[in-house]
Image (cartoon, rainbow, N blue to C red):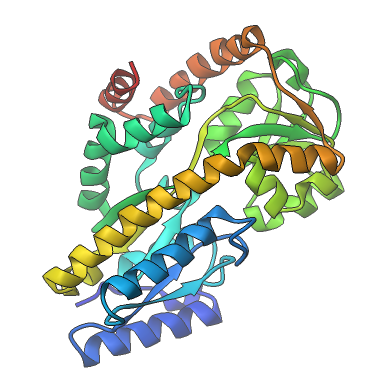
Length: 340
């Protein structure tokens, strides 16, 4: 049986999808159609999350000979982050969640985004594929939520700073600026540099920057293009702040309803789609930076000395913030040990 859910708080589309899923689940051992929700436009060239979703759909359907079908709900059609996470906890579906969806249930996820922790894509991949922290995180997340972490989805490279006021070369350039934050961890990072941060949903970022509610934000080049943020942002600083990722999560009842062969096929498809995303995202990073430069953004690549300034200020401040959130130091210790 599924847990109860407050459908009154959901969008009309989300309610219809959930009711459909529950009816199908009750009328048969498993509904052959699996709903997959995520944010961002249905454009594989601009949105790496959609690229992952479309590849996963194709691979699952091929590997199961059509016995399982993935139905895609891009562009936050089923609601914002926390709403979609509530849905995946209560109905047989998949969701690609950002930190905004995971952190309210598992704040220890913020440890995986300690700024300037990874020097390369390879280091980030090894951290999530082989690290003790991530293996423990998957188990603890399931224990708390009954939801499975199936994959870390690469979504566009490393985060960069943008703003519409002035070039940012060092932390001192942040003073007096207002930044959009994805979550409270980003607010803490901005404040360490002397700026202020305000959480704003992705769907509202463009207008917030256009109207001056925020002067800047941070995202990988892919998301800057996806959101047309280059239209309202002048300066781009490639500080390689954090590895940009989201998380494919699955409802427990869904996973238990699969036959052994279906589950094997699904997990094989997830792994293959993850590797495809990594390869394609990394190949497109420089191309996207060139696109932004050609379309009006002033691009700055900090020197190693300047990157060290960002790290020396931002990382200790972020670690202090983590401890203030009552996050057990064992999580921080595991993560830092994994990247040594």
